[in-house]
Length: 208
Image 1 (cartoon, rainbow, N blue to C red):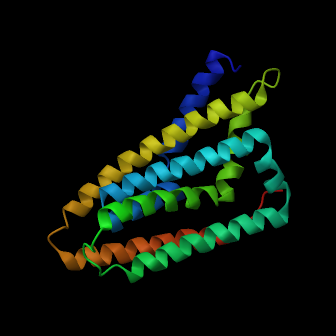
Image 2 (cartoon, rainbow, N blue to C red):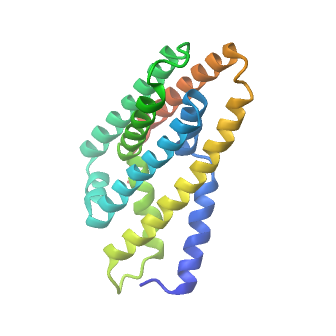
């Protein structure tokens, strides 16, 4: 197993990565601004589960196979990109809907499932784990177990930061609650952000 000093270095590096604004953080903020704190939290935990998918895939070697195959990478990239763009378009289209029946229950479950898919279909997350975690792994010990443990810690840190972002975005949204027109514009902006994230993913290239 990784020695204590290396482990501390990993924690510092993983925390710095977690607090650095990125697509995942922007997605969670956009979902919170569009649907409120409950949907934002559901999205945060959903993307966390999606992150665990990449950790397990990386530990057993699936991610490495995907990154080595241009075809597999492109399929995953296109699926993830168009899914994000579809979510953004849907958010924009529904921006004017105010408190539809059952939104609290249905919205939370849907936000959680969508968060899982958004993260699980993002090959850039797989690439990150494959590039970042091995730097802190002891090759003389069980590599898969170390990769899994460090990956889980990284995902937990990312999710924790996303939760903080969710509460911040929810506070900003609450401040505008008495101005319905601004809520609509905020939801439209959130939809545009999701479409932008999807377009960015569509332009992503496989390393190597």
